[in-house]
Image (spheres, helix red, strand yellow):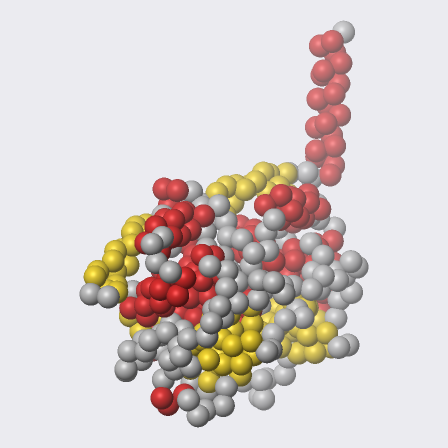
Length: 398
């Protein structure tokens, strides 16, 4: 009897399998040294070989709606929630999933369509614009993002996520058509703020020694850095100062730097400790402009600054801010000049040249080397009479 029952169940399942063409596969996707499992049904793999147009995109979208895509979306959303992924890191997971379904190198348009489809089905308000040769993928964002195309619609700002793949498009001579597809519940705005980095495996870190001289003594810091940081931020745009100043460092990098730094500062006064950190950010790295280093404007997070051989004033300002906040948690302001950014710190008593902000005095602590070595409280002569702007202010009590 039991044997007959099992045989019957097997036949029923086989019929359902054949009639519904269910070919579900659990796919392992490498996510920065970790493996995540995502269910990708074969029915979601729909060809796209048509010429690029709003009509062909609409047809592809409608075909996807008839596929078994919901299990993929559920897995993606669960991973995002369980790992508390920021939107930028979640988008990297979307990219890797789309790459698994449709490799970018084989069919760029199809790969981009999957990124757009997955992101919208995860609840984000994203749009597409197409021409004969280009497909641009936008997402709604309320934040200040620089150097990439955007447009506004119904008082909402949409930022392009894939412009870097083209490098440059002559929008004056090429008309882009928005693909108007109504996607229910796709309403979320995308944020570029990053509150935590992935939990990289310990064996994936490289060792790097950073050295600098302070008061005629050489100091060496042996830091663990993960090269995958470069991939995470490869296409990260230029964001506002508050956003990139507050990007954290990964756990192993933190553990290899902060305790050792605190040890060195243990016997120094607060003022001496800030001076020590200021000299670290000045002299532990080689200086180079972004145009020479990257070919474009790029603001490095604190960990990127530690990782790269070269950095400029923006990058050192973010690292200085991170270290001072982590160790002393003092009020700080970022002071932007036409060609330079400096930092100023509020001590119990102002030191040297100070700058008034909201009724408090902040002392200059320039984290970037100048032609003349500057002490705490000094700003370079060429900046003294220039107009400046306070582009970010941090106060632990406000």
